Amino acid sequence: MRKDIEIPEVKDVYIAAVHEFNEKYNTTDWNVYVINDGSEPLEIVLIIAQGYNDKDMTTHIRHKIELLPAKGFAKIEYIDESVFKLNNFFSVTYFLNNKMYEKRWEFPAHSIQDDNAVSLPVMNKKGVLAR
Image (cartoon, rainbow, N blue to C red):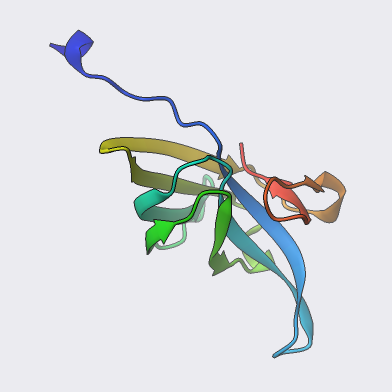
């Protein structure tokens, strides 16, 4: 029975933390984005975010994006530096060509920092990619 279940491989989708200036509050903040570097739009993107370690755990935060265009990106949330000491994960589920895809990305504790920034696909910015 299990051998009959097809689990498609997630490709061209990324989670990234970007350090950027917030004009409204005149601060430099970290924001988490979902990036679609594929040639097809993603439908009904569901995201669950949580931080944890051996002692602490944040609440689950849920997000929904109806449509993420091909070669597009969307801001998921602001991430406060106080949770960088935790392992922060983002579970993403979406539909592509009538198939459901799912993957979990994680920012290990203390990994969100400018020293770990790389060039991001689609966004033309630097940021930290989740693993």
